Image (cartoon, rainbow, N blue to C red; front, side):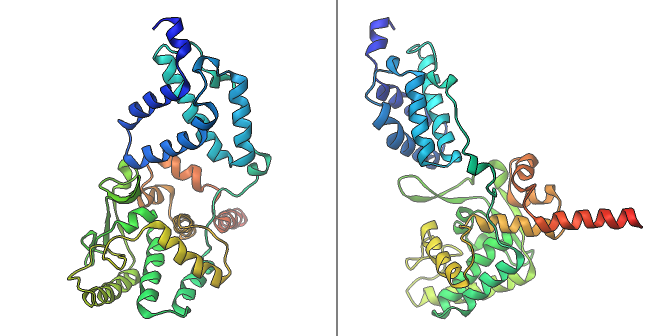
Length: 326
């Protein structure tokens, strides 16, 4: 490619090529999220510029604007993708230097001291679940919502994993729950035959009381669906059309009970953190938690949850004190 041809190339053309290449190696849901970032944050500000005219200074100015509007986790993701696109352009011989290599990506001061995770304590979880049972609504919704949020908190499943479950994934005799797919979103919601990572494919055990609640829920769900002309439930948690429920619908149900219980908003993923926190307080080690949550490696578990449970820290120092004093 000669110099005049390189100078004529606009950034949108490089974006198009990079997206086409990127799409080949990722899931549809991952591509959809990345494409949304590109369309919303890259094309409007840089897309129509000739790529050779895009300087480090211009990129820094763009990043500074993102810093004012987004969290560190969010804008650092933007920078990562933008850097990869310019690196792709270097590989294609369109540019000779990546303007992103010398930019500064500031960390917001107020984020350095923020708690990394949101989760409920044992007492808060008990309050949340009891609020569902005491809420004024029909018995079917009450049973469904209680079972859904109990299973989130007692299994540590990601919400997408839980919503993709069929009754065939549960063995009532062995109390084993097989997790091997997930509800995800591209341009629409669909069941992905593979979960987030290879380690996410796992079998976990459920406690006896949760199994008893599941047996009761299965009967109620079956009666409800049969009255509506369905022979059997397609999923553990179904909508009115006997299809899987989507995340947003569950979030709306969560907000109802969270506000009624006057608890902090932790989001649906917060129930996964809650499960991990309570596992640690119950004495589980990092390896146990890694396997149950389906983390790719133990370092992920340690990085996320090292600081999670204050009670565990208190218990540790108390055991140390007793050992030394005795």
